[in-house]
Every structure is written in C-alpha cells, then in structure tokens.
Image (cartoon, rainbow over the protein chains, first blue to last red):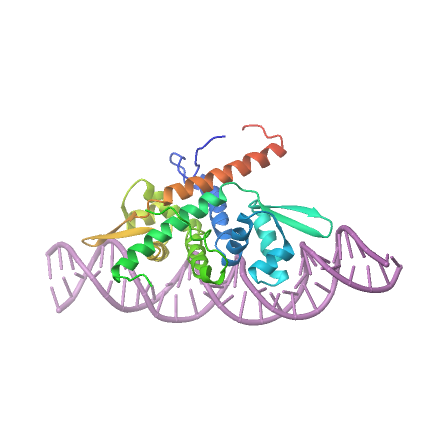
Length: 122
Length: 122
DNA sequence: CAACTATATGCGTATATACTCATATAAGTC
DNA sequence: GACTTATATGAGTATATACGCATATAGTTG
C-alpha cells in the first residue's frame, strides 16, 4: 500500500540499501533483453501459450521457454497450465506504465536528435 | 509531446520495431547496474562532481568515471565543466518516475513474500 | 614550462548470460 | 503400456561488460 520508494529514503546509511539497489538492478536487467520485451509486448494483447509465443516472436522453443522462466521468476509473468499447454500472462501491473515511460523518454530523445539532422519525414 | 509508445503500436509488422526494442532494452540495461543506480541516487539530491561521487559511492575514480560516461551517453545524465571539475546532473526527467515505479513493484512483491513467512516487524 | 589535480580511457581479466543442441519431463491419446 | 505433443532444462560456447591497473588528457598554479 505504501508508495514510498526505498531507493530514495534512507537517511545516512548507504550500505543498508545496497540490497535494495541489487533488487532494482536485477529487475531492470530482466527487462534489458529484446527477446523478453518481445514476449512482454506479445502478452499485452492477452494470455498466450508457449507455442503461440514461439510463433509470434520467431524464436526457438528452448530460448522462449527460458526467457519465460526468467520473467516468471521475476514475478513479471504468471503461468497457468491447461492440459499440455502452459499459458503465460503479465502479472505485474506496473509493466505497461514502465514501458510507456521508457518509450516516451526514447521518443523524446530521438525527436531531439532527429531535429539535429533537420529531418524530413520519409 | 506525444504519449504514444511505439512498443505497443505497430499493426502487423513486428520486424520493423525490432529497432525500437533494441533501444528500450539498451536503456533498461543502462539502469541494470547497482553502481549506476547509486550514482543516480546520489544525484537525486542535486548536481555533483566526480570526486564527490567517488566519495559518496565508495567506488574507484576510474570505475565511477566510466559509469558516468555510460549514463551520459544514454542521455540520462548531463555534464558541465567548471575548471578542473566536471559536474554531473540528472538530465532525463523520467528517471525519478521510473525508479518510483520499479521500487513500488519490488516493495509490493517483498511485502507479499514477507506475508508468506508471517513476518514480524523487527 | 614544470608540477599538480581532476577526470577520462586503453587494456587485460573475470564473470554473467543469451543462445543452440540434445534430452528430460509432463500430459494427452491410442 | 507405447506413442505423440508441449514445455522445460542440462551442457557447452560465444559474447558482453564490470572492474582494476596503469596511463593519457585537460586545466590550474607556480
């Protein structure tokens, strides 16, 4: 319920929050792979099983499965078994906002950079 | 000004946005190092020069400098030279929000996990 | 210019991890 | 049980990168 960010509180002791920094870094690291972002992107449209995700992302089954494990371990996705298939879905409601914020920042950067080249819209 | 996220638009062609995914992943990767998060955290309080940052983060000068280059290249920080010193500051206004969102998500996760152990507040 | 200080960078090493291939597990059908 | 399909995982390899050490660059002072 608290909206406090323990990255920013912490009066004097920096060492104490080293743990928290690790966790934050880990979370960013999970999101720092294009393939995992593709999976997340695909799941924005709703729950999908592994085969569907393999098809959509054009990756190998082994690799997709591994990335799904990583995302699930980070509590970003959740699993649901239904017979032979396993369905994955986004379980962390902050993920869409996170993507929006990052995409917005990148867009602004690119727009600014584009300006430096007096770009024409192709 | 646009609030559109090109991660989510794009009708059928997935390949076209592969570029965008790379950029987003790179940005997350920059934020995926505890040392860089420490630097960002230190700069929340305001502009600091390299020596100050070395002192605050307890890192080596070489390492701090390198991370500052990385963050600057990603347009997250900006540099300002003043005599011999170089002052760094946070130049991307989305960074605080980003940290808040991630910290919030982690807090919620930890709280939930803590519940599983019927935790007592120490 | 010489000496000094603050910051940046080249290079080597260690570590992490993404990927592939092969194989294991799990669950359904005959 | 034998066979098939969907998903997960062990092992090996290649690549990226964080760090330390030494040194280079930039700017200041004498």
